[in-house]
Length: 198
Image (cartoon, rainbow, N blue to C red; front, side):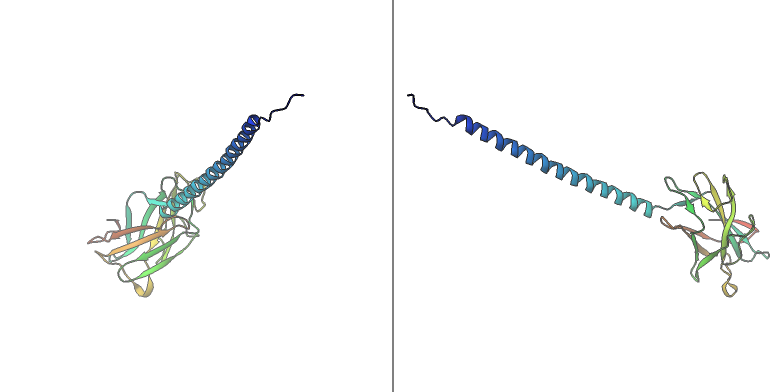
């Protein structure tokens, strides 16, 4: 009877193949997890950047000149007219939720919004409203792309406060989303009925 010779070469090759396949599977799973975490981190970073840009860039910008309307005696500034539109890439702005603030060296005051004032009439002291709408399809207070709103901002009338000639001041428009937009101007050395403020 012939004696069988034990040969383990094939078995060793099979073990090596199994170990190799196991390493490949583990490496594939590990790389999938690492890539998934990387994609998730990249997406979160992108969201943070977009949110930061939308919150730090102003939603509105000035279109044209800022006009100051003097009182009947042409001795003090009564109100200003400023036309605004959406800045590039910004969404609609709801002017029912906009806060307008007047500030100078003597006073800082948040102005009241009077939504029902008739169009094309100056705002009363310490108030503001939408004076006129250009390119608007309706009378709503949503500033949409390609629309322009002219705002009338009344100078605060607290205790007979007056803004005379050569007087610097700032009006700040604060939308509910986005950075506030500050308009800094100085009254002219002499008033007429309507004055371009620089």
